[in-house]
Amino acid sequence: MDITGRVVQWAIELSEFDLKYETWTTIKAQCLTDFVAEYARDQEEESTTWELYVDGSSNKIGSGACIILVNKGEIQIEVSLKFEFPASNNQVEYEALITGLKLAEEVGATKVVIFSDSQVVTSQINGEYQAKDPNMKRYLDKILEHLRHFAEIEVKHITRDLNSRADVLSKLASTKPGENNRSLIQETLQEPSVEKIEAKQDILEVFGLDLGWMNPLIEYLKFDILPKEKKEAKKIRREAQNYTLVKNVLYKRGISTLLLKCVPTSRTIEVLEEVRNGICRNHLGARSLARKAIRAGFYWPTLQKDVTEFVKKCQPCQMHANFHVAPPEELISITFSWPFAKWGLDLLGPFLPAPGQVKYLIVGVNYFTK
Image 1 (cartoon, helix red, strand yellow):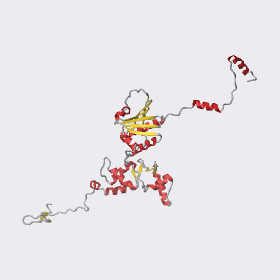
Image 2 (cartoon, one colour; image 1 turned 180 degrees about the vertical axis):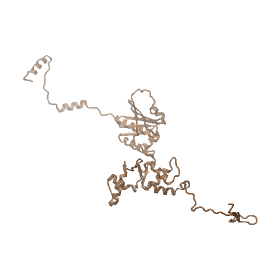
Image 3 (tube, helix red, strand yellow; image 1 turned 60 degrees about the horizontal axis):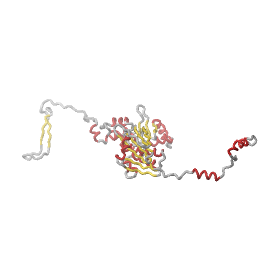
Image 4 (cartoon, one colour; image 1 turned 135 degrees about the horizontal axis):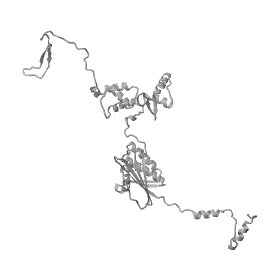
């Protein structure tokens, strides 16, 4: 640049302004110190406490829930949920709370105070009530898992009148606009947040721990393990062609039927009782009851034998079953040529003493007129 004379030319142009040119030097450590001191931010303010209001509503038409997340009155986020699956009142409360906690995590909240008008839900989270229902237990575990993401959490129960705004939105009604910054979000949940578990395990889901005859088949189909005896191994390999595993549950393939769920020996009586004592319960014979069990989707190798023994031990089944009424021997006709040719006498008694101390009764029967 000195060779081209550009610096000299600029110096001549700027001389009238009394400016002096200085070359750029290396930045000193003091300059960095001054920059950091000048632009350093003040100590971060104490984290804000967020308030989370949740409420749910369930009826015959449908179910819905509402979440209101408030930050000291400055930010207000409202979420209206609609459920496409049947849900109980406690379930919609839990679904609303799960969605609210996810929303609080997204906005970066660390301190959250939860308000709900459901005493059951709030008491279960605080440990005052015990969640005995399996479905509620799964929801409670999921809630506790979300609560670990926050530094401070508090759950309070409030009356419905103090939670009226969330109650209105949970019923999918319109709300008046507030004065603060407010965001209304409408969402639809197609399925529950946790996998459903039947409180009382349905008979179609029987799966005992003692599998009995099912163990060799499952070991072969799942782990390719066969018995050491060649004859038994050949038998298991041949029978396994008629079975399949679906989600670790053994099923039998059928030609004219769907997959039949295999039942362990320890659960056969329970299955037969459930099949017989259904909505259209009746006391069937062994063959009809066996066909009914197969139509219900069950199978085990000794089905016909077990059903026969089951029916024999059931007194109502024996009373209502069809039975053969023919005598053990063929009837023989006896004819007589004239009346009073043959008589039969029956002695009945003793009875209570009658006048004259009579206790017995002699009955004469004419075989010709009989």
